Length: 445
Image 1 (cartoon, helix red, strand yellow):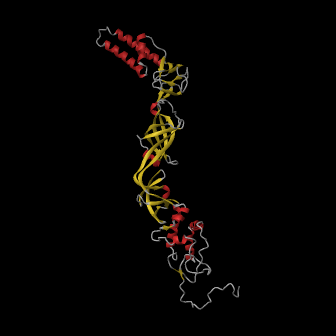
Image 2: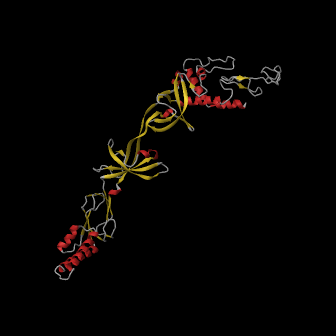
């Protein structure tokens, strides 16, 4: 009884397959009840299915299905071919400012903002444009020192004391250098020397071209030395920080050229270049951030916009490939079914590699030109597993099985497709009917 239950469990996994094949045969015009029990040890399956089942090659698990049945079941085949595999690598991200083109405007002395020439954020300025007028007591004192040194140098010019003229020139040079270190322009220094008057107000100019991103000063407000007054950003170049899956990082390396698409300008592509890969992968999304430098001479793109990069990468060269659906993964194995024609399909273990555009690389186990099942391979896989299970059990089709006559078994049960040698028990007299089951019409009925 235990052996029978084991056989039933082995067969149960493919009952649906047998029903499906039987239904397919019913549509061919055959009477499903045409195969009658003949009283022999072996009963035919409905229609042509039994003939196809008898063609199984138990040695290698090959499956035999008629071409018409395979067509009805949706089994199609294709040829393994040798080719290069290319995959389109994509990544999405956001435009940000180019950090190398950001400028913070400060002064190296304290003072007050007397007048603002640039009084709102977002304004575009050229290098050298006035930003604000400042008054600083420290700046006034430095100008007075310059004028005093210039007067002393003039007095020492005609001195007969050795080295006096040189000392006067050194004092003037020191006063000038002090103003230069405070980023006072040469034009302002010359103006002080030529006029001989202290300029109480100094005009602060933009050190670079760009847009005003921040303005941290108001008219009449006091500022300290080093306090940020303005922050400028150049839009002519931007960074696009995109997320790239870790499996694609080898195709997006610094120096690689990529195509950039922006939703604000559909249908347009501009060329960018990968400049940096951030040294961290996010644990939840399994992506790394890549920096793409994008030229923006017309200021068409703005920080905060979304962009997509696209590049074509070669993932395999001169490789044997099959459709992705042709490979079935069964635990630790990858299997394809090779078609040998005439309805014969051989399950073959293969080693797979890279994937691209719905195709997968086969590293070993298959040669170019061989035909493999491209669709509905799961049906053949189920049938192949059924045959393997049958081969692992005694008494399956094509094999003899010694049954224990004492096994508790319904005498009316018939098991089609099973050949059983019922060996009589030598200890039981064949003429002794004491062990036979009572008939329905007996006295106890």
